[in-house]
Length: 131
Ligand code: HEC
Image 1 (cartoon, rainbow, N blue to C red):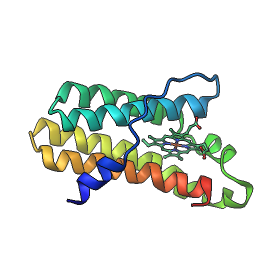
Image 2: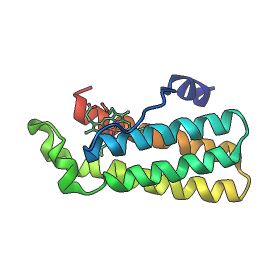
Image 3: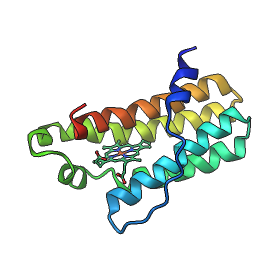
């Protein structure tokens, strides 16, 4: 199953926010949140999924302003700031979808919203890292 592969590929590292840099803090917060959501789905622990969602939301809000995002893009990628910003918006939308699906006890499709969030992370990283 595709989703299983995506979940297995997700990095399970627990990152501690150790910097004053807003980007690093935001990324560490989202990283922790995503790991918690994954663990929550794997262990059927909805409380953990929801705690993870709170963290992802917090981290995403810290890094959603296009002016800020632009500062972290390589010079030759600054024209793609809209695409990068759209990934932050996509994460916000996915969080809303995830919440509605959890409320409806539609757990399989809730997990799909999680994997779409993971794709949004990768889409922005692909721009930043020239993947
Ligand atoms: C709008 C763009 C953008 C989005 C969306 C985004 N990131 Fe990042 N991320 C960055 C940038 C910029 C860096 C720093 C450059 C690098 O590491 O290549 C980074 C780096 C990271 C790092 C390494 C941080 C470090 O200390 O070196 C982690 C972990 C990370 N992101 C996690 C995530 C997760 C998890 C998500 C999705 C929930 C996500 N990111 C979504 C832009 C983004």
